[in-house]
Structures are given as C-alpha cells and as structure tokens.
Image 1 (cartoon, protein in one colour):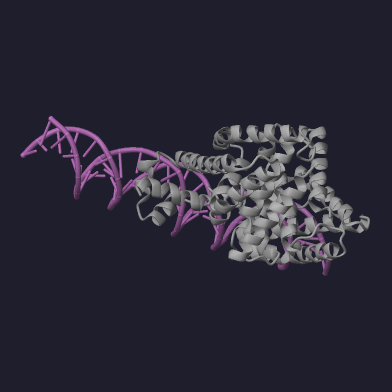
Image 2 (image 1 turned 60 degrees about the vertical axis):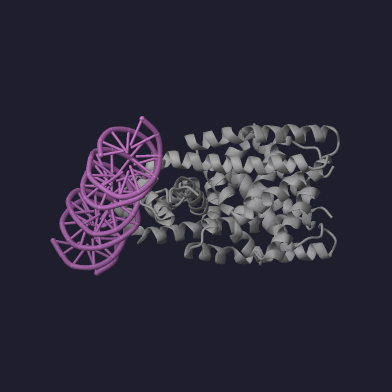
Length: 194
Length: 194
DNA sequence: TCATCTCTCTACCAATTGGTAGAGGATCGT
DNA sequence: ACGATCCTCTACCAATTGGTAGAGAGATGA
C-alpha cells in the first residue's frame, strides 16, 4: 500500500475514534511511521486530509449499501434488513467509519456540507423508496424522511457507541455481535411493519 | 447566577456542540466574559471542569427522566412514551446535553468511566423494567439490554444530529418539532409493542 | 552522464494550548 | 480601621499545534 493510502486509512481510524480536532498531524504521521511533513506533502493541509478521508468513508458506505440493495429481494422489510446487515458488518468492525461521518456531519463546516452533498443522493433515494412502499401499504405509514433519519440514528448510534452497549452488559464477541445484529433487525422490522 | 455556574453552563454548551477537545479554556472564558485564569480559579484544571460539567448533565438527565416516570401511567408503552417526551424537550432545545454525554461516553477515559457510573443505576433500572414487562407479555420479546441500548441510540442520535434531519428536509420550527416528536413516539411504540 | 521528478527528511515558525505565580480590588466580620 | 477571604486580574511558561522552506536521497528517462 502506498504511503498516501496508509495515511488515509490511519487518519480515518484516528479521526473516527477520537475526533478530528483531537488528532494531530504529528500523531497520524507517528502511527504511519513517517514525519508530519510527509503527511503535508501528500495532503496540502489538515483540512484537505479531512476532506479526502471523508470522501473515502462516504464512498465506502455508498458502495456497501448499493451492493446489498442489488442483491436484496423485493419486499421492503427484507430490503431494510439487507441494508442493516450490510452496514452492520463494517460499522462494528470499524466504528471509525460511521463515527467519523457522524462527528463531522454534526458540525457546521464546509467539510460537513461537502459530506452531506456526497451522501445526499443516497438519502433522497431512501426517502423516496420508503414513501412509495408506504403508499403501497407494505410499510407502516409515517413521514418517510423522519423514518429514514430515525433508522440512520439508530444504526449509527448503536455502531458508534460501544460504551452504551457495555453499560447494558453486552460483550463484543462473536455471539454478542450476532445477537446485536439480530436484535437490530427485529427492532427495525417491528418498527416498520405495516 | 454565579460566575461558577455561568462557566459550567457555557462549558456544557460549547463542549456538547463542538467537542471537549475542540474547545479551549480561553474560549469558554471569552464567552462567559472573564479571563481564562478565572476559569482555572473555579476549576483547578480542564479535566476537573469536564468532570463537573458531566455531573451536571447526568444529574439533569436523571432528574428529568425520574420526574416523567413518576407521573406516567402503568402501561409500559405509555411509560416509554413519557420518557421520550420528557427527554425530547431538553434534548432538542439543548442538543449539547445529550451531545456531550454521547461524545464523552464514546471515548475511553476516566471521565467516561465516571459518567457511566453516574448513569448506571438508571440503565439498570430501565433494563430490569423492560425485562419484567416482556415477561408479563406487555412488550415485544427481546434482549432487554439491547433494546434499551437501541432506544438510547435512536433518541440520542436524533437529538444530537440536526444535520441528519436537515438532509431529509426537516425544519426545526414548532410544527417540525411536534412532527418529529410524534414520529419518534410512534416509532418506539411500533418497535416495542408485543 | 545529466537532469528531472518523486518522495521524505531536518529545521524552523507563529499561534495556541493548559497551566503557574502572584498582585490587587471588593466585601466581609471584628 | 482591620485583616481575611473571595474573586479576578496581568504576566508569564513550556509544550504542542498546523504550516513553511528548502535540502537531499533515489529512481527514471534522454
């Protein structure tokens, strides 16, 4: 892997788990095994680095979701289920991914705006889809936009806050992961069923 | 209000909306209208300040929830509903409150540990209650701990991420707030009904 | 061989960080 | 009038921040 890619990956992990502001270029460089100035050679400033990291994260997310949807059956509950399963795996294995998206999107900045732009079409498609299925009576009636936001909040929240799970006695072993994933699926099914 | 209280309140707002690391003592002092050294007079270090702010936030949350539960009817769906309504108001009016709790609890630190300690009894009570009501057949069966975590994730997520709501075309006016609150209640009802 | 391009380095910078030292103005009970 | 205590101030500090300047090693192509 090139130095550039290693910097991107390391930055994603550090930014996502500890926050953009809390991670210095020096620290990223140290983890990669390089000097800070090498980081600044590849990315002209920290802002640019953050932007690129966000682009990587957003793309990764879109790809995973798209792939899951292409393979999913027709029933909307099954399709929601497919998305949950698809996002769940990278989310818990790499909490930094959703963590970073969440952290940045919460702030008001140019970066947040660009990130939102990159994910907007995904959001629009999801909202339109939910609306259609509600009209067809295959999903519980409600505001499609708010339902989508609630789903996002639930999934992102649970994936980015292992501490909350630990507080209720959950363990992140294989059985725990399976249990969590299935509980999450049942939760969404119950919440969305007509 | 005393200087100390104003520092606490300002710190809660700033920490909660922008993150602990991103907010300097200088900035807190400036907003309060005082010098940084005055902040350090009242709180011997930034760590101590963070701790005290967390204590305030945790206490506020516990008080609000307890009050709502005391006034709520017996049916578990109604009780969940009461908690949602009670937390919803301070959460959207002051996103910093839940935002701070979420941000800190996500990190692994002594502060996170102390915060968890302060909220643990609340969590334990909620989990035990959910378990009992499931046994009584008044709630959908599931892992009470995970269900509690999912509820927390949904509520906190939606309250701390206005950007996600904006992405689906939501507006934070009076009608929007009412709509969101009701959608949230319906979501939980559907997700938890037996 | 020479020049060029890619990549990483050392050395430095101004600004900001959390924190210390200690002076001085109020307000208090005596 | 008095010292004591409470509160905020100015002035400073070492460490860290993001960023600049420019040298030099190593490969590549002519």
